[in-house]
Image (tube, rainbow, N blue to C red; front, top):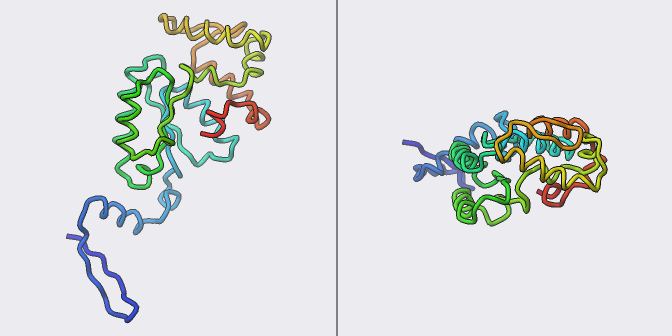
Length: 212
């Protein structure tokens, strides 16, 4: 049994028993520290689908001075159905903490169904702002074009076509694909892009990324 003791203005003590599990979790949280930082937890958690998403988002958040937000991937790169189930598990692992349940953010590709999005929004109590579905199927569509042009040694106007071909080759079962002169996996492309990305590239990012 757990009780909360408070002091009234007249100096008398009031004793009230904790009634619910959620109330107990909140009580323990405040006893240990009033913010995630006090407990060495991240300020918030961003859940993505795969390792390439995670690499890119970490770089973006660092450039936005939001490095205290942890980015977790669901190990579902290139396997949307597996990614969806993995995101479910991540949500169920972290969302029991009241702080994270109210703040946790999910960003997934355009291929995720309306039904799944609504399930996640219900699970975390989202008002439609924290579980986000991008307008395109693949984080690669959101990489700065000038960086992709540099990585692939190709004209900027050829970048969109090259990314479509890159993703199509991987979706057909290949382990690596090419973007101009670059050949590698989704993760290797994410690393190459992230290594070249600086603060000067933030303004050129899509609002879907920059304002997330």
